[in-house]
Length: 221
Length: 303
Image (tube, rainbow over all chains, first blue to last red; front, top):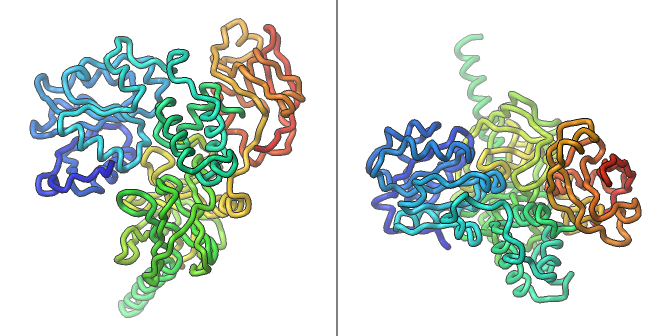
């Protein structure tokens, strides 16, 4: 995922930011514009502002508490086909809230708020092409009524004992090389295990893996 | 003050700021460890660089560019993802270590953010320390004792760069990766302490009890036993043999409700409080066992 869309530089993606948090908007604006092909044309603090959304906007980037998601439906002008990228701060809280109906008739994205820059831009690139994006594991549940469960169904995404070993080392802040040494396996194998751990836990980085791993009872603490 | 004196004063002030930026230029480096735009780092010693962990997306082929334009390959010496700091090591001693500010940064202190996101030279931004916060749980699962909130613009590539006072001395390491894009600075005293641990051990020290747990609801009747409103605790699903938890007599099925009087609602919160600071210390665990409240003393081990 390079997050590059050179052909877009001439004709930037028009995006709108919606979040009550000024600091969050500032951070996201900087991330989104860092590639030079996304233009933030409007910033909004409340879903009610959506009634004034420009028709040429292609992507709406949203950071809202889950209980306010339903407001998106109320205020987005009917028939506006813009893609929606929802950045979620707390998966557990999100799990108890059903996704609003606007998520079913357009390209949508669902990612953790602390997503890396490259991934964020790649997601925007996919959305404007009409593709939906999300984390493996979470994305399947978009279409499931009642929203996203807070933890995986038993047996579905269980870590193997080796993956738990790797997670334990990650929690200590070890580098791939150090983990390889500690477990007597190659760095390549370490990377393979790490990506499996990320996918199974539905996370994007080490810090998240440790949090979710602890919560699911994998991590000895 | 005469107009002439005023002109002289303003001239001196602006020269001072420029000199501060020049000084910081000598210890602010470019860190190329991710696919897209590079970020910045600060010379910790003559061969070590401290930077933000979230900008180190790959561990191989990390390259740094110094003030003199030279490019060096670096290895990852250690990382502390929870506090968003990482330490890089050069093979040889090429770096000019940062000069540290004598006192802690203060609210209202004017400062500059200094970064080197491109090979074209440093970039500098205005920064005011608008508040000092902490301790706070970071979105990355850490417990940051103290941080500077900056009235500053988080330009791309500024993470890992320096916050300096107007004499060019280091006040903090800047990052927008700790709190969902909010631009913060980690005070240099904390960053240097973490850097020291990473330099020496190659990893962070963490407190260790030896349990595995999952969040569980505490029913109202048991909350009454605790004599407080606490809806969730940690159900112990594993107690490892030979660990502090086993020695203290913790059992699978216990609900861990608090550590040193601080309620624990989630295993993540336990990870957060078991920092290096509590290693070797005795802590009091509050447990629910068979409907009764039980207290156990545990000496925290180390991972």
